Amino acid sequence: MTDTRFQGAPVTRRHALAGGGALVAGTALAGCSASGAGNGASGTESGPAADGGEGVCVLSPEVTEGPYYLDGQLMREDITEGKQGFPLAMAITVVDYSNGCTPMTEDAVAVEIWHCDAWGYYSGHTDARPGGQVPDEDGEGDEMSFLRGIRMVDADGTARFSTVVPGWYGPRVTHIHLKVHTGGEADTTYEGGTTVHTGQLLFADAFCAEIAEREPYSEHVLELTPVEEDQVYREAQRTEGDPDSMVVSPVPVTEGTPENGYTLSVTVGITPEESATSGGGGGAPGGGGTPPGDG
Image (cartoon, rainbow, N blue to C red):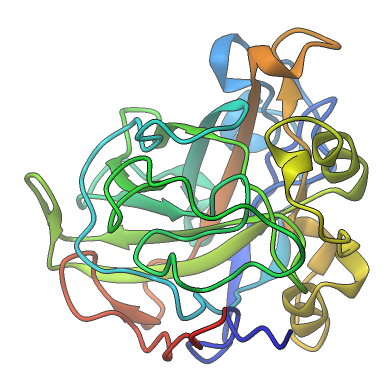
């Protein structure tokens, strides 16, 4: 099948800072040479913003939001809505690259994420088939909002989410989309403001292979796409920045027992003074395109 989910807003560039830990192969749109110990559900973190170490900021590509972005999502931490899959606790720290990688804690900074379910379906587009032999979408949760949400950052510049490990669809590697918004107002949704970053997290091949062998992911019979063959990864190779900085591996809560869940901590560096790539969380989406009927 031909997939166009990744075709959306034009690709520009942003600076990004690493936040990887001992078991984290990389971080969201970021890369860093330092590593440090983490704690609690946040998994592991590293870099100047996380542990005061001598991390090296790298330029990392900003990538398309894809056509499956839906505007006006709910302000909330838990975006699961009953969807099947291994629990995933995420901690996303936003830092200002242009100001010494200091955590962004002012100007109404919000992080938005969205991703497909264990079988490759996105809310709002459940008629788009993920490819391969896959069960019908299970009908759990709100058809327009499952596995989507926005959170304000806390005093440390961190937004936390509770979700499930995503599945995949052809020809994409398992991934999570994210945006960073500033200057808006938070109520039940995030209104106004400016989108200052759009990116994706690409899950490492070894992690994807492990997950694909377990229920409910194993019910989706579709060959995995290696990171280096992923279309967004290749897109990033044609821009300035380090495409490997997008690759992440969640950390298991209990070794050998994925059913107990995973944690993932990433640190995203942005340059908030640069022009926005799309409207804010409550405004018009930034040109995602129209998804095909068959996904």
